[in-house]
Figure 1: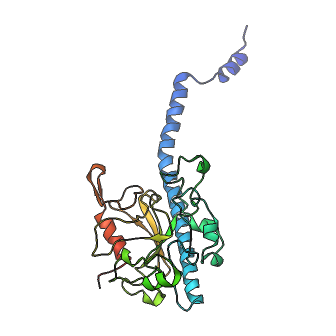
Figure 2: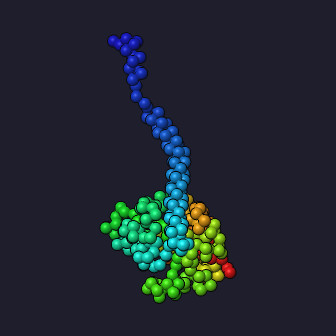
Figure 3: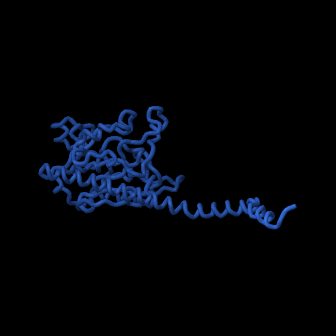
Length: 281
């Protein structure tokens, strides 16, 4: 025989019914659906802030080098130990090689490897991601330097035995040698470092077609992170994240600006990037 107090105690100990559990689960799912986008947005914003910090510090290293060398820019020669960076990230040997960074001419100004990596960049380019030796690793570097900044001309090629990169923009747009050469565009508009597409990252030289040249990408900035944006630093020391109107994802070398099947029309984006490299004289 149960007393009233015993019955009440048993009723209070009764578990949830199936319907009650389903209601609780539904409420949790709704709250999670509301919170996850906000958390993802906050994470993306934090990564963007970190990327901007990296680019500003790299830009400061670039400026300090110029101060120490009578205004001469860090060299941006292809495959040369004299350059700001060396190595080839598109190869198995170079993809994670930190010594290519440490041997660069900017290393002494800030000896932090993470300075060369975008916080939002994970994984590897398509040609490397399935290699067993690189599984679970990331690229040692995500940033490149705009090629006109310290690129090699015919005289450099002869003197240092490097490739002449004047052909990228043409003789009308000479390679810059000193910070005082930056006139058109102005230092506030002339990009130096940028967050490059994983599919075009190789050496440290970011190649862009001349403003009056072929309407096609050569190297490409990333569009696979920062909510379809990319980080840039400029010769006056500031950094920005540019949002793209047509670029989608990280595209490969010499990508066309129009890909109707994928809904890509990146003509405006290419014009914007070209204007940060060279302007019509």
